[in-house]
Length: 125
Image: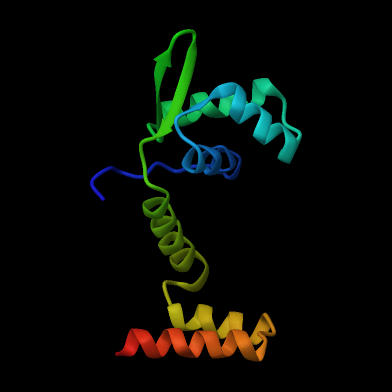
């Protein structure tokens, strides 16, 4: 992970999810997908695309009159940074505290608890 991951707002993240899923992609295709999901105006969406360009989270290439956008950062890298940030901010970096909270407060099913046990057992091998 050589590239510094920029801070991306929740709204910009909605745009990034589309670009990660489908790229390169025209701005009009982004507008159509976001508009359906969020009801945002085309101007708002294009403003967010421009912010992502300035933050160097995405870039574009020209295809005739159209601009095709593609990500400059990997989704997995972004999620890794955000996970660490969340853990540090909300649980003072304690993974145990987070798990205790989720296990007690989220009313996990027996199946979910078994899945967690299996995952922990796999990691412990």
